[in-house]
Image (cartoon, rainbow, N blue to C red):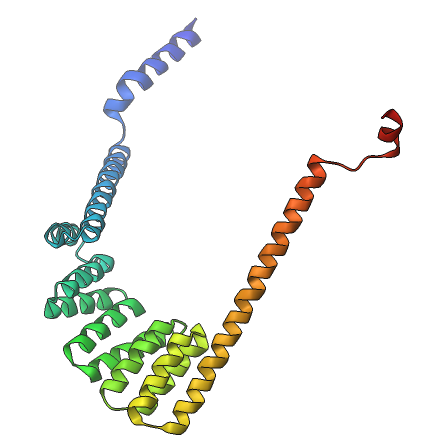
Length: 248
C-alpha cells in the first residue's frame, strides 16, 4: 500500500509540480531553443521576401528585407552579397562594391570577388577588375565565366595576349564555340590575318564535331526508343509456343 502511495505521489509531482519547479538549466535551454526556432523562422521569411521581391523587380522591398536580416545578423555574408547584387542592378555601384567587399571580408569566396570585379569592369576600373578576377580564379579556377571576365578586363587594358590566354583557359573548360568566337574577335581587332584564319578553322572544326556528337546522341536515343518499343511489343504479344499451337 505504501509503495502504491509513493508511486502516485511521484506521478502527481511529475505531472503538476515538475513543469513549474524544473531546474533553471532546463528552463533556460528550452527558452533558448524556442527563441532559436522563432529566429530561424523569421530569417527564413525575410529571405523569402528578399528573393521574391528581387525576382518581381521590387528593389525597395528587397532592400528592406535584406537590411532587416543584417540588423539581426550583421555578419551574414550572403545577405551582403545579395544586397550588393541589388545595388549593382540599380547602378548604385559604390554601395554595391562596399557590400561585396564586406561579404568578402566575412567569407572569403570567389563569388564575392567576381561580383566586385564585374562592378569595377562596369565602372572602368579595369586594373582593379583584373585583380579581383585573378583572386577569384585562385579560389575557384574551374569556372569558365571567371576566365572570360578576366579576359575582358585584360582586353580593356590593351593586354591582348593575356586576354587570349584567359579565353583559352575558359575554352579548355567549356569547349564552347562562343568562347572561340571571343578569341576570334580579338584577333580581328588586331587584324592578325594568320590567327584569324587559324581560329576560324578551329571554330569550323568544333562546329563539325558538335554536330556529329549531337547526331550520334540523337541516333542513340532513336535506337533506345526502338528497343523499348520492341520490348513492349514482346510483352503485349508474346510468341506462340508449341503448347499454345496445339490448343489452337
